[in-house]
Length: 189
Image (tube, rainbow, N blue to C red; front, side, top):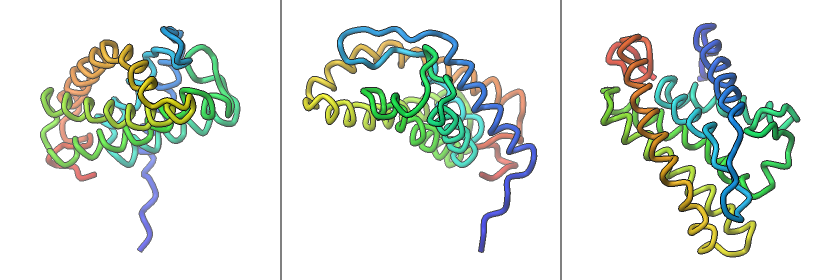
């Protein structure tokens, strides 16, 4: 049995979230240390997409954003685009965004209570997934997994703040649109 097509409203939300992730790229990245991976606000977008849209639509919005970036649109922080960011030092973190949105969406949908503690847990899990992909890829890229892990410690304070912000924003959105988003008791993923 084939999956039903996305209804127009779901498709619109998916496209809007891809655009939202692009808008977060207007804030320039901050390069700290020698890893070549910038500290950006943009990685909060996939977390929020998973919190609000759920696993399927949130992941679709991230895949759409990354596909547009890969074909050359300068949507990443600092106006980066094309295939180079995917094969450079930050490539693993970019691919990790897909799985971050997926994991966050799955957690929010399964726990059925989109309150701040659940959203904190989901967003933190999403960041951990992104780190697994990003640090592993960076370790392969540099040839030193240990150094990649240590270099990535610089991201922890900012990512912790993003997790809190995503949870708070997600909770507000869920309260504003009860029953219309992922994790709501009256709507299934």
